[in-house]
Image (tube, rainbow, N blue to C red; front, side, top):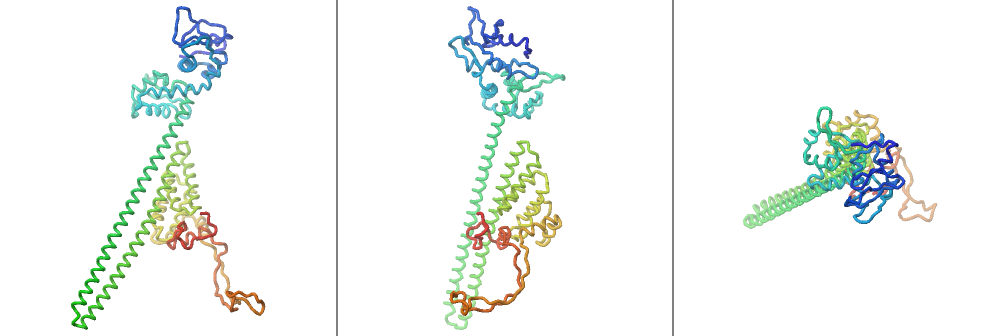
Length: 503
């Protein structure tokens, strides 16, 4: 039901609002809004009046563009005044505009209380129904009852409860279908604020779940490494047992062949040879296992960094999509993070972010450039980065080439200009320098202050050589270490640079 607020009817409508929804004959607007009761009438709420400023605030907040007011929204304001501003005792209470405060907050409180009165199992479905279905981009969206009841956890009882509380309005369309929508536009803004709070809480819960899953995955990885260590200990114990057994056989053979000097010498020689072979085999086996463990550990760490970066990127992408960012914007943001990781030499993390961007099926020039740079780096780093190279080429829709040279040819054909820039970034330009002869050291005939390390004066000859045109960059030196099987981030790396290094 709607009440028209044309100017000639405003005074009468103002005077006719009373506590508990009672109406009274018109009274002068200058005296405020009063409650007309005879001596025989009685209400639970004591008499009170509204000031003109309070009425103007209510009319301004509730009127639509045609000057009309929904009675359901007016009832929400009146109920708030009776429940919060008017006590059960006293008289001549006057409601001022300041007493009402922010009227939008009244509707927010009404919404929260309506949801709180529902059974706990229905509160979240009710919120998602109102906040996600019936309001879109700040506009009320009417939905047919049949479509709503097809949703999980939405029942006719829930729709009836929300309608009875004046949160929803139900009406029939021209085809006779029952349509449900939010009761009034004034409820849209406070419900939208509540939705933002709920979605933020849900995102935080999702992030906590991701952290829990990652913790479980890391625990499983630690157990896997522990099992591998136990297996290595068992293998070493077996090798030691075999070595001791062979040594015992050697002693027994020597005791049995004491009578024949020649046979003893032959037996000793054979035993020594077998022992040496077994020792070398054990050493090779131990070194091989150690190298395999180190390689597996390094690969596991790289895979973990890649997976962590991918999960983080997917969380970022999901958050941006929820904020109505386009797929291209999300991909561009992820590619910027990929380039940031490359800048900090975090190539495994960059691969994880790139995988997350690839799952959005939106290829951009920046995405292709980032993928080609990662493929270039992993290819030049050698076999230790073979798995990562295969993953990057898969994102580009390519199978791994049979050789390092074939991969370089593919990258150069894909984008010659970008390939040339990558060569300049990861390899210095070498300039030829002619060799020659010169005297090195200090000439005592010319100076008496010669140090011991400057003596004696001697002639040195240099062959032709090449010198880099510029200083070696961290990217170039990191690629050199990676190709040698070293990690620039490892504090134990002997060749870790002390220059140009940010940590």
